[in-house]
Image (cartoon, rainbow, N blue to C red; front, top):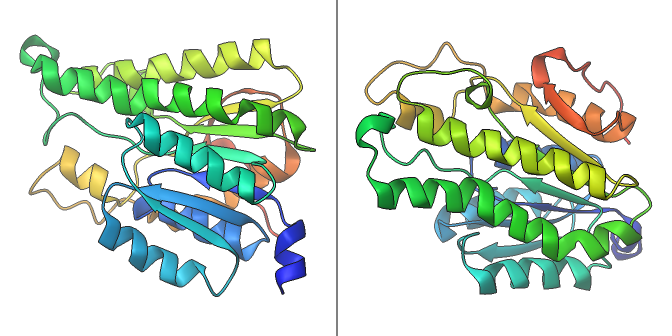
Length: 241
């Protein structure tokens, strides 16, 4: 089993303790990927990792993606596995629950929103680019939102940050055309982030994040050109790697 793991591709997944991050990490593990996973909440991350460890080799690092030392540790963990083949920038924050209107968005919270959703993914991408360039099929998957392209009241901070991440992803693609840089809008999902956006409301009508994973796995398998995609428009993967 160890020899099989040693030859498996490596994915770094941020915000992997719950929601889409946890679901995608599980999907990657089941299809033959080794994982480096992180999240701010150590207990939630440990619980998620316990389900992954029987499936694959996993490096588990609790921490905040805005912390320089933590990002260095993530890159080092991937390097110990032989280098990252995939980076999934999934960690996100709304800036408030519910997210405040731009007219009175507290500036410290707005700064944190951009640090988590834009600056940290850019910084982690910078750190991992040397590894991704050595990979046979290096790729970066940035989790975006429809709020990046549509204007919704109360979503200005989060949406502007995701729009900035989309643009950064497009520029990275121009600068490193041999790699793939995808921004994907997963749609509204039944996650804690979605519940924070609508506190007290029933969000049971949203699909579970696991429903999107086959479409993201298909993206990795088929490797379409770099760009922005909507998960609902992607064909689902039906076979394992």
